[in-house]
Amino acid sequence: MDFEGTQNFLTLKGLFQKYATQYGFDWLLIAALAYQESGMNNKKRNKSGAVGIMQVLPSTAKDNNIRISKVHLLENNIHAGVKYLDFLRKRYFSDPLIHPRNQVRFALAAYNAGPAKINRTRARAKEMGLDPNRWFRNVELAALRVIGRETVRYVSNINKYYLAYSLSET
Image 1 (cartoon, helix red, strand yellow):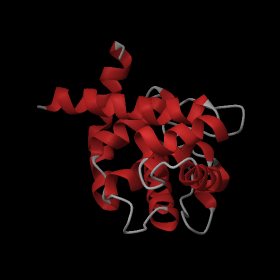
Image 2: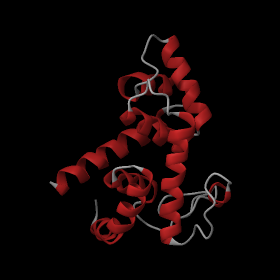
Image 3: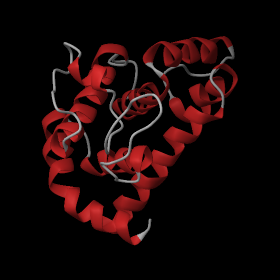
Image 4: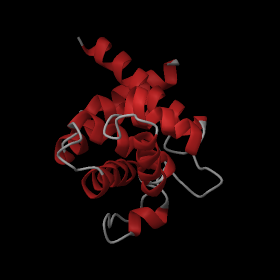
């Protein structure tokens, strides 16, 4: 991580903690997601219209399940991103057969690729004789075939950043 990313991480820690706690996530995971999405740059915009540190689409933030306005503002952007991640986890991956850690991993994958694609990869994993309730070394292998490398790299990167942040906090 570069110096600017480190400075942003320290500045944003309180907001990550606030919304991670509110929605039942580890704040370091939310920081890792923000780093993957934007390099912790709230001014980032992408060609599909996603904005801010969490790269949230304004239409997603306005959706009845999220309902957060002014998503271009830093705190609102973080709130919307974490609330959306929570929505994905609860709506699509809350099956008690899925370990909570994997519920989060599936939600992260869906944050990137959409929940319908992730559910298709879970079905494909089952067809391949893999565990449809585990991401690493199971559904991620099906995702390579169904979606391609982007989502697999995305979840892997977040996991890598999360581990690095966790080690730096000890």
